[in-house]
Length: 418
Image (tube, rainbow, N blue to C red; front, side):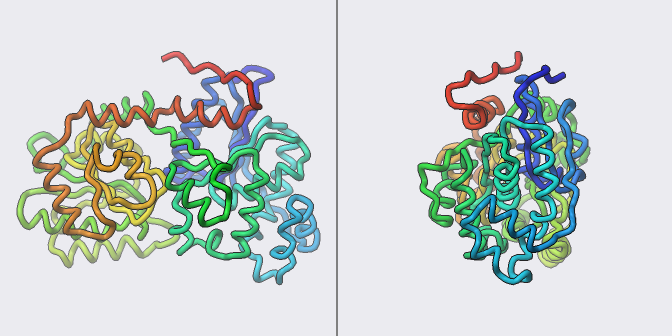
């Protein structure tokens, strides 16, 4: 139970789908609660695969939509952010990207005035913007922390929020009004500064909360797939939504190269992306064309990927770009050898330039196949991998966030007893 009078943090985000950002926010919330803080999840959609993992004691506050009266909505935004006037005075069809924010904004303002949180934490550009506008219009003076979790210059190729120069200007000026800007890796921080024109000194790196007792307990469970049973051929594992960003085609081609020479299997855990719903079918076709369908299993979303990681022979990250890929850290914590593309950003930092697992060029299936085979033949010591993963503990991340969320000089709430 949250102590009466505890400091309250409102976490503003989309919902509870099974992505890395959502998992990170849930871990933060659980750790905040354990340290005596009160937590509100203020969400655009109170649904998703991870809804059942919302920690006990956290409140879920769905943002209800209100009708958009454009004159009133524009005026409201210009009060919150006068520098956005050039964008907000454009024709309606040119500012439709912010329409959902305009519909949620009155509800967020009402909640902030009622709940009176001491701090607001947001994730992803549109919810960062919503949190800044809502906090300023509520008049509470709560501390606002916005966070970026992906390599924005690469993500902008398929995401209008950082691609549209006008929206980029709105985001930049809004972010600079936040009390703190967090990036999940130094690579993300450097890229955000360069792409958005934000002074690098204004951005703080706080790695995601990844490794904790719950992960290790789940890793000890038995996976529910026969390919991971003792005596079976080595199994490669990849985890991620079926989206082009993850570049599973390169992984599948690398696997086909290996399978032509030795017995090996490939498991891919991850649901279809609503953004690219046809990508799963494309991967299935590729698997068939390469003649490896009998040795590749795409299993969809898994509640406990850590049980798979602890039994797999090699974990492979084949992404085109990332932020700080938690799955790579999770695999290390599960004592699973890893191979990764040297994509921006995160793998190089996690693996210390290849010391804890080989890094290969993005999109190079031949190099990926060689690195996987080398790792199968000579895996690193399990204790080395677990030790590296420990640098990305939940407690370290929570300390980093609380230093930014709480007023300067305030003592951090103590860590929960182990």
